[in-house]
Length: 476
Ligand code: ADP
Image 1: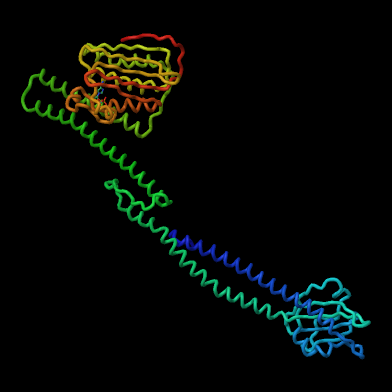
Image 2 (image 1 turned 90 degrees about the vertical axis):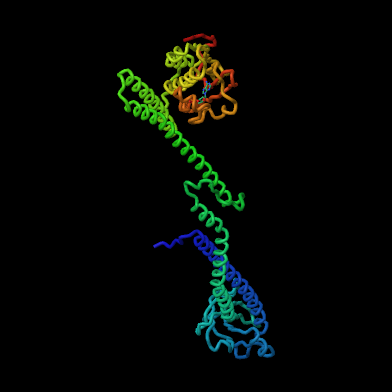
């Protein structure tokens, strides 16, 4: 089973300790190796020097053997310490120092021993003692001899062992201390996350106005907090919008329902003539119409919000689309003796979803008819806005929209005069649907209006093609 600590703090500490321990182990290994090599270097150099000294002290005995020069014997052998053997090239032992206690420094010499390479090598005595051994070939008077000098290497190994022990003892202590230090550091560094978690737990849907406290907005956690706060802001705005939308929608739905109910209740109170009942049913149907339109608008907006609308684009002349829209509202304009004039370049093509954009223009014309006085003129103008743009303007001679309300006319459920406009059937959704329809086609809609001087809604859309520059005129 894999062991993975549950919290980041412990994981960080564990990683930190693992990395540190590996580094320490590597360091200890490399340091020991260097220590060993440098101690042995000294060792070998002394050994080679001693080989020369021993050579100078050798003297030939009358019996053919060799001895160390008597005047140096006492002093020299203990100083050099060590183990000395002298051999004749044919394998006769000529001298062996007493310190060797009759143990051999490795048998009779080979043919090449000490001739070319005097680099010391490591050997073992019979009693297991590790020695460092150097050999050289010399002449004593007329006799050729192989001299071997060896140092006891045990001290070197002992020193190294002690060094290793110190390292081994201090290693767990160092790792333990590093672990505690690392844990404390990780704890301190991650403390803001804990406090963020505590604060975040307290934020619920009805407390979206709360924000995380940020100590330093420049560090990573500060940036995380800032991003989180920004997300809360967006959520709050979306929630507020949703809440407003729901309460506005239910309010709008309730009004016609209340009207239907009260008209019905009043009608049921007394016996009435068939004509009166027809009237009552007529006004009920009016309210039902209103409800139907409202439900359709709400459906259009919720589809738009959900992003489920697939545009069926086709290239179409914007002027032609304006004529189609105008024919939809023609009857309403005629009722008010208003005239809709359509003018502009018929060759300017846009690539749009015919039904959606036509509804957008219908909404604009419907408003112009609703809010302008009887007998007034409404002008729809299509004109080029340079190489890439095309404008459609709906200009009326209505009351205009006060400048303080202009920024809100495209908001959902916004009506300048709530009481009055309801009579004409508006729920304040027409312009928001129009704006959505224009924007989903990559365009935008603006309003120019002055109180008492009429309004101009200008839609700009991306131009697809201008098949000719000659202007054409139409009307309905
Ligand atoms: P409604 O369904 O109430 O017409 P809209 O979203 O279409 O809703 O319009 C929002 C409000 O903007 C309307 O209630 C009206 O007060 C104002 N408005 C829209 N068009 C015009 C216009 N052409 N002239 C004057 N006021 C207008």
